Amino acid sequence: MKLFLAPVILSVSLFAQSGTIQGTVADAKSKALKGAFVTAIRTGLPPASVVASTANDGSFTLAGLPAGTYSLCVQIPGDGYLDPCQWGGTPVKLTLAAGQASSGNALKVADSSILKIRIDDPAKVLGQKTKDGRMPHLLLGVWGGNGLFVPAHKTSSDSAGALYQLSIPRDTALKLQLSSRDLKLADSNGAAVSALGGDQQPFQHNSGDPNPKSFKYTITGLVP
Image (cartoon, rainbow, N blue to C red):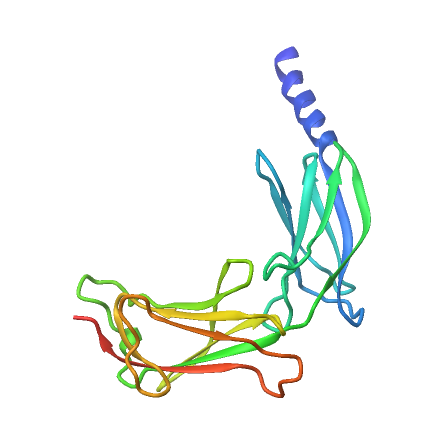
């Protein structure tokens, strides 16, 4: 009996020590956001993180958290909002004691501008493998003021190329980064992009600008 009882007691003891974080996610106008992914990330060692999705009313529950100090990050599927853990934002932070239940945490996410990058690919090079059998490398994203690189994601493609985009903050100095080890690229003026450092374009979308920022490049071939 003792051989079976000891593991059960240990399991119950560990479960009793885990905490929970409950709260809601809304935009700047207090509209509840359904389907947002909330991540609790513990600082220090050992690392720990738990992810939960918000319900129709924007509520979430993060369970099974050991004691510690946590930052709460929020990712909204699609584009249009900023994760407070990116772009030098101020995420909600809280400290959990062993077994504590923290409730009433109201997370607000700011809306964003949307950066669009068009990659023209008239020869459909992106679908061709390199000489060593790989799909072509393409690095495309933005350096933020906090020194972090945030990659853009493909949103659509057609017979002539693909569209990439990324949610970015307004009124913030940023730098677009485009580079590839395998592709020959040209900017919107037809100038070749350096094969060594790629192309870096400083930009900023101010609140008063009527249109979001956009860039365009063309793939002219594969690197031999």
